[in-house]
Length: 314
Image 1 (tube, rainbow, N blue to C red):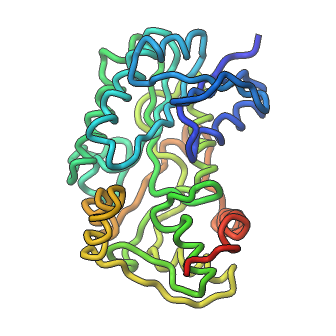
Image 2: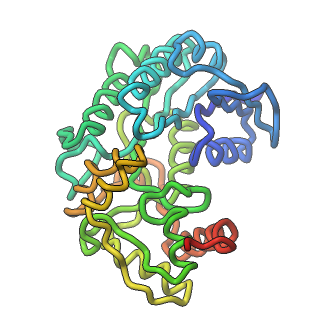
């Protein structure tokens, strides 16, 4: 019988993980917060409350590996992040499934060289929450003799990532309207960006491995200044629009009306200093490498053009 793999979450990454697992010939179940039980494209979809360990245990019963791709909205983190993490950690321990958890980089204080052994020293409330969540996942009480791995990614870009901090819906609507792409902080600082299909491929490699355990950085191109990455997009689009720097005071003003933007303010420091990921471990152990810039940008622009060019930002 084919192995069962369970994907928790159906946002920007979960569907890509599910698709890749189906292509490998696995049985796949996707768990969402609300959904009628259906099967589509070889994937079973069920509903479960991931903050409830018993619910998670039932949803992951019989699974070889579980991929934790759940992420509440920014402003819901104080209320939901730790209960969800606790439910997933405890529930998958009950079911005995290996756990592969998608994570970000907020827990690191020194952002110039982020690697699996880097010191955890969060500089924000959300970073502290992420550090605590990682401890819930990796702590000895959560392991229970199974494989548990955390896979960390930088800021997303790519097809199906409209919420990308820099290269999402707002970027494309602005550019198609002839307006400059935007950057937080200092656009001259080197910054790592993770291509979403590479994120999914890394998670699948870890989940289908017999040895993956501990912390990994997902495959990523060497850090470049945000301005240079924006200009890569411009060259393909045939545009020269410059880069508009978003002042922190403007984010604070917008945050009065948008809670997600309000929560972004404390993370702007990540664009004010070097922000570089060292993915040597996953390259060495699994032979993974990031998608070349040109290929990744071509695919992202094709998606952005199809999704957003008809109604550019006014």
